[in-house]
Image (tube, rainbow, N blue to C red; front, side, top):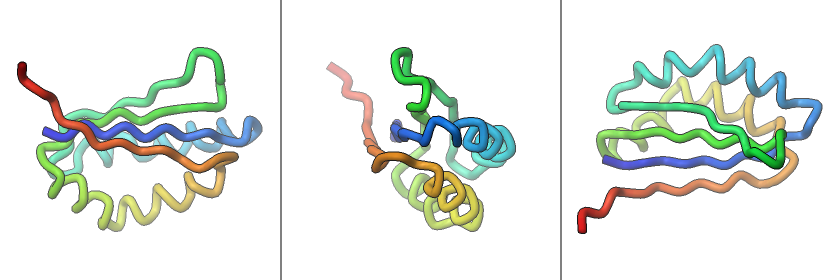
Length: 96
C-alpha cells in the first residue's frame, strides 16, 4: 500500500473555490481503481493550507490515477489556486 500526502497552500481568497473542487471530485477519486481512502486535512495554524491524505493499493494504481482524465481535470483547476508550490510524499508502512 502507498500512502500519498499532498500539502497545498492556497491564496486565502481561493480556499472556498478549492473546497468546492474537492467536494465535487472526492467521491470520484475514492471510486478510482486502487484508491482505498482519501480525506482532506486543514492545517491548524494556517487555514489556507490543506493536505490530501490517500491510500493506494500500489504505486501503479496511484500513477494510473495521475495519468487519468479525472486527475487531468482536478489538478489544473486546483493548481491555479495555489499561493505556493505544493509538496507531495509517497510513503509506505514499515513493519518493525
